[in-house]
Image (cartoon, rainbow, N blue to C red):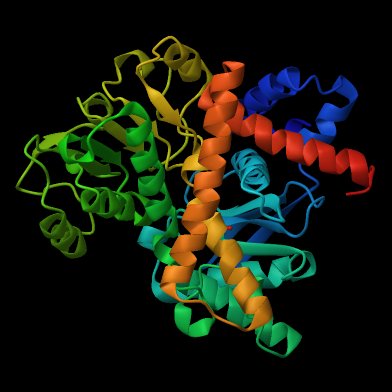
Length: 418
Ligand code: GLU
């Protein structure tokens, strides 16, 4: 299927093929597991604030419908393409399957730069996209959530547009909504908290002392910043951070509150006076115990994988490490990888809790949410570590093996339809 051609989609397919070989999945069953069930591409004309009309491209890919509704984020970024979104949808499928969530994977995106758009323009774009998606979404069909460049406000507009269409309020149509509209407490923090929880478990496994550990975080959006704060609570010193505008390094540790104040004022971490500026490439090669890529895909490549100086590579982003980089890291057993599909699963796990709470109209406390989140992550971490050790697999292959096998089994039992 040529329409998905994109380096990120090829990367997801390469990962899938490795796992399919391991599981000895017959060739004739593979395409059905790999290619999305359905994909929508829509033209979104909106009125810009200057009165002109501009058309944006919107995408939604639903990877499979075998285990329940599809689930996954909506990304606003200038480089979004169908192939990228399809790869991200496939990863959502494995992520949901390996954590035992009753969902297929999905992902959506609009090729736009939200940083250059007014709130009014973003609202018109979001409402128009939701309107176009109405035949293909629903709380039992496909449930969106925030991803890069989107947030609670975007989810609120989607929920409102859908609800107006059906004539009553439907909170379960999206997750990651404001708590006041049926969102879950702890959803905003869930991905970063989950990342930090798993890093802490990895530190236990490697017998690293959190109070002596250092971390570098690439990408300081919702996921990266919450990860940094949560790691600091475990006693870890954050020595490096970055965003699109640049990176920072301070071996004595960054003061996160002052960095947050700088970020609020300047909309970037770059230029923070209490650290040296570093480039993105330098940042990835800083000496640290924990490296957290929390930005875009394909950041750890064959060009830099040999030069990482961390003990734990915690993939908070989706797809930050290419298969070529994986092969290099496989030769470096001193690096413990927390693969994306496990590492950042906290977000979709609490999205699942939000959806369940919406369907029941019965809401939980933050302690209940956090306890249930950590229970699921703990179970997945132990299962994947065990599989990795007993079968001599990388943590990524062990995680993907678990996810792909669950889906393959379900498809075999159900038949060809979903
Ligand atoms: N966008 C997030 C992810 O990539 C969350 C998806 C969700 O909560 O549905 O995992």
